[in-house]
Length: 375
Image (cartoon, rainbow, N blue to C red; front, top):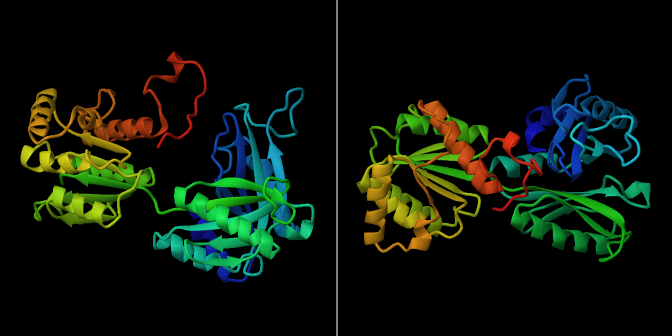
C-alpha cells in the first residue's frame, strides 16, 4: 500500500472511494511479490502495478467493479495444467489478487497507517480476504507493537490474528494466515492477509565523495533510507547529497557504533565504505564486521588497497571469519568506470547478496529466475 498512498490519501480525505487491488499470494515465477498494489481512482486513473503488465487490464476491471459495487473480491490469475484462464501470466506463475473499495467508511484507520509509515513506525494491516460469511470479507485490524484498532469479526479471531500478525510485523514479513471461521488455529475457512509495513531498510554510506552521491541515488531508487556520513564537515553537506535522507558530519566508526547501540541497525542494513583512506575505513570496518546482523558490508579500493586494509584489520584483531564478511573490492564485475556505473555495480552486488543471486547472466544458468530471500 505504501506505493499508492500519495494518490490514495487525497481521495480518502475527500470522502470518495477508490478501488485497491493487492497481490496476496504468489506461486512460482510471479512478476510482483505479495503486497504489490494497484489503485484505481474515481476518475479511472491508475497508480501502481500488480503484475508488471501481464494481467493489469483484468485487475483494472476488477478494481473498477469493486469500487462500483462496494463488494470486495478475491481473484486468481495464472495458467492451469490443462487450460489457460481467460487472462493469464506469461511467466507461468500464479497470483491471487484481493480487490476492495477503500474509503473513510471501509478503512477509517488509513490516515493513522499513513502517519506510521511516514514516521518509520512499524505497522501492519490484517485484512480478511476469504470467509464463509461474506460480511466478514474486507474486515481488518491495524496493528503496531503495542496497539490494535478494528476487528476481523470476533474477540477470538481478533486475539489470534493480533498475536500472529505481530510476529510477522516483527520479522518484516507479509503473508496470508489461515484459521477456522472463528479464528481457530490449525483449521480452515478464514484467510487473513497481513501486510507488514516495516521501516525501509537502511543504507549507510561512509565517505562524502562523488561515488557516494551516485550510490545514494541508487539506494533511494531501491527503497533504502540512505545516510551519508563523513568526518569532514566541509564535504558532508546536504547540498552535495540531495538524494540522501540524511547527511552526517561525524567520524564513521563513532557514528556506526552509536547507531548500533541505539538499536538503529538491523539485519536489512547495508554498509558501504567508500573513503579508501585507512584512517577512516579501518576503524569503521572494525565496527561493521563485528556487527552480526548487517546484511552487507562493502569497501571501495584497488586490490592493493584491499590487501593493505586486510592486513590492518588483522592487526586490529579481526578474525578470518569476520574478514570473510567483507565485500572488497566492492561491487560486481560490470566493467564500471563512472560513479554512476560503479553505483549500479555496488547495488547489483547488494541485491545478489541479499537474495542469493550468483551475479551471472541469466542466459548462462538454468532454474528459477527469482530467489527466495536469504537475509
